[in-house]
Image (tube, rainbow, N blue to C red):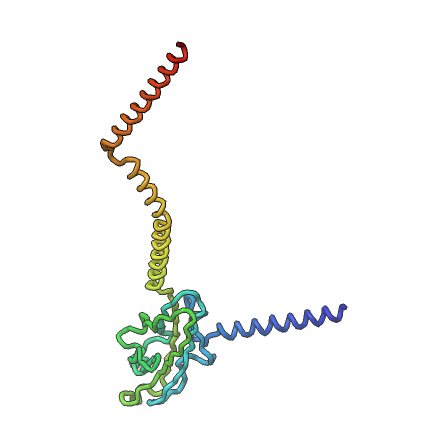
Length: 243
């Protein structure tokens, strides 16, 4: 009996360890990637190498990585990406020569220098992902060869890539609207269910409040006449009985 219990405990422990390893693998991110909001449950980067970063790049070199987007939440989320400089800015800054291209469903959603117009440092939207949706984003960094001279030789740049997931407000409004529509339908149904009773009460009121006509007076006179005749007959009968 004790050996059986020990086996059960060992198997349970192994299963818990495997589950923990799987969860950790799903939430792991490269050292230069930060996941904010619910992005840790939305963005999955299979490789644990530095994201879009490689030392000793030469002009024309590029790095390509795949981002797996899996929305396991009940609500849609909009995903944002921004780049945060780690290494200090230099006169001949390598980041000015690194071009970033992000593709989603064969559509390029960003194709500029990493420092291009401060867009990436402020953050760009990668799109809204609905519940249950699974997509792949392709990110590629390339060192421009045409405009990169010897002054950029042996240069390096360090960047932190920050992903932020924000619950989509539009969908929240739609959910609120659907809730209101449903409540309106319930109210209308209740009114419909109550309408027949209201109709019957209206009909009763209509009959009870109908205007009086001359026919009511005729019936009264007829009743009075019959009553008088009956009284007359009764009085005559009494007189005859006394005689």
